[in-house]
Length: 524
Image 1 (cartoon, rainbow, N blue to C red):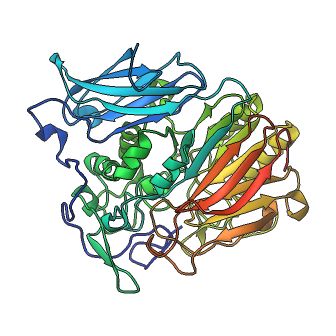
Image 2 (cartoon, rainbow, N blue to C red; image 1 turned 90 degrees about the horizontal axis):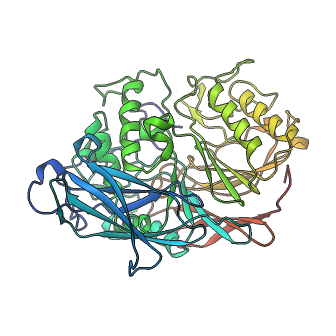
Image 3 (tube, rainbow, N blue to C red; image 1 turned 60 degrees about the vertical axis):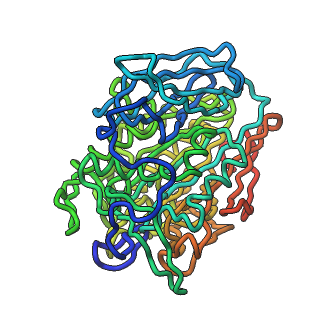
């Protein structure tokens, strides 16, 4: 939710400040030069490596080169790389902004996989750069192994970028040290509509300094600018180190394009020369697919963000896309709304895949909260809820249909995880408190931001009977990461009992709230 352009601060809106220069501060030891400008020497992978959508036997390895190169991945059981297996990858070049992905398959389940990426001159395979190494764990094939993952979202929002005085995105180091099996990023990986200024004066007079780049000195409109926005975060040492150890499951939300966007929208924002969000979102989605290893974004897999990632018998992660298929933001009082926030096809997919799932726990990764009232201007609403505590209306109709399906199909172990609102909270939904009663109780947990402004708590909508046993939020809009803690959530699943424990943590690792859920239940 944010107010219109130029109307002051809103949730995740642009931080007003001085225009950024090209590269204002000393950067990490990483060249910002465009790869096409680098012509001599051996290929280099200075942007690090990352792995995505890991299963019991597979994963996707990502890299970015500084010039055209042949990508080769080697995997082994140990860091010594004895008996390494080689995986030939693509020739990467300017058509993908010099990024490439290699698919690994037939991996042993529940094992630590060591890998390294080699980049070779396409015309001379003997000319290779220094290998870049990483590691990840495949999902266990049995139910006895414990499982841990983290989730959060919202990175480089409101103009709060990489601050070298604070050590950059240090929350990633907090998470890395807890050694999760994977990280679920719930959206707003970039703020394409939020330029990064050189410096900002905080309310107490302190100066917040940002690493800046040419692409992040303005809003993203061209494909090159969207690519630069995704590349910006990889300037951070903490994030690159985290990516080399922790695989990701990544989804997107509005700020990959523009605050509160929806298909067909024409922007009323003077900063933009291209105002068609369909054009902007297509460019952003292309860059998003280039900078994150996501299996379903391949052309032969439908080019979509929503998917289910099977992480062994204990867990399936259902990744939603609440952006590309939604209807226009509105007052949300329709009595019939088949498109809603998911679109009819995605809703059918979600119901079908939830019914098919044999996992003990079904985590529904929602890029927007369900019962929090997220406004878009004075009369419209951005998420599902619209503040009317009565019977479902507008986008709530889709949620009611889904919750009814979960109840009547006896689908056990559903938990909702989200971010978006720039604070942390826990909501429990129960029919005895609700206007709509044809569902079983469930939990929704909110965490974030990773590195963005903090915002005040939103109101609850009573349609699905939420209670809020925990919330931590600042008391004013757009508090900087230097003033308000940043947050991440942690989920542990016990391999013996099957219990799932959610902990809401803040930067530094302190536990703010925890809840233990029992397996095998339709409602909690």
